[in-house]
Image (cartoon, rainbow, N blue to C red):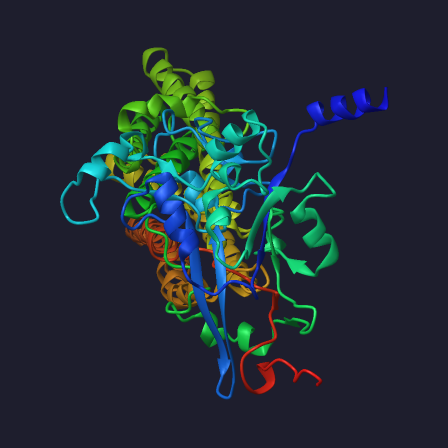
Length: 541
């Protein structure tokens, strides 16, 4: 009876696959990277498993080690909820996997990943410059233009289980990198099995997780001690600002290029258009804009929004699949943005056909929803520290309103549609300029405590003064001057509006296209080895 119960428990057991990597054992031979390439047929320049050569310290206190990195198959993977198509999912056994057939290549998962574990290859490349028979036989056209990543060799694991093999013990059922490691530095197994090799290792030895402060609970755990030599905590040398600002440091994240100027254009045009559509409606309630002009203003905003969405379309890798981005409203703000766009356009069209306060209100409200979605999309790109800071959603939202007010003012001045010339518009603009200035100042001041990496903090510092002058102080002063001098109010309102627009365009482009540095790798503990104070203690006898 007990045997039957034990067998039943084994049948219903759901494993939690993970790895334990011993930093002391790894010799940097790169066998795991080659085994991964061979097993998964990855293209030139695409490495699902990498070994980073790390040097730290200053002579004579120096140390060298090798750090194996790749997808961490997090318990709380930030890449899964953001995916708008459901292409990135987490299996019951914890493996984070990718469905290449429904991925659109939007790269949201890549910027959400704090471990630089995602790649998008748009073109078929060959190792020797031209196609070989071997590469022809194993090429994967389904991976082009979409996100790809390590899957812990799920096919090997699943096939091995079906054959009665034990992953982590039997090489044929174990991920290729672990099975090939010449130093047995990479161990694979079931963290839910207390007797598995990985469970025993983390139970009996001190260990750490990469970037654990982000709350992802990565399922690759690193050992850093030996029985004879305890490890050490990262010190001042590892936290040195210059070292963490050096792009040649392999632990420092590189500038992401997947969300480039085209993505920046989406936030720029999206903020201006949604802000204008919402404020046209609000201005009509305040009696500033004639109600009969709101439909035309919101239609113009819809055209601008379409420009931003077109840049998004240019950015995705599999353009004909764009409709699949409607699939995940339950988790993805990108999907919710698409629904907000649809609702906004429907309301704008209805307002053109049947003008009225109700339709203007609906279009204005859906424009605000769209702007909120844009704010959340950038904020949830957790792999980019400058974007995930707590103030970023508020900055996107407030900036969109200021930019929208600026464009609306220019349109009204051009069409002579201002019913109450300076006071109401100017007061609103001054308030929004002040709010935006305060938010950016707080963002910069809290950048270090918010975990923004030094390279991004440097860019934020460089652009702060011109932004405050052009995008905040200059518009605020001109709008105030419009209040004080009615004779030149129109000129001041126009110039201030142009400056407000320029400021919003400036900071969004710089922060998205030029300030999106990846998280990099944070090692809280290291082996005690090297020279000087890093040297291991002399063994007795």
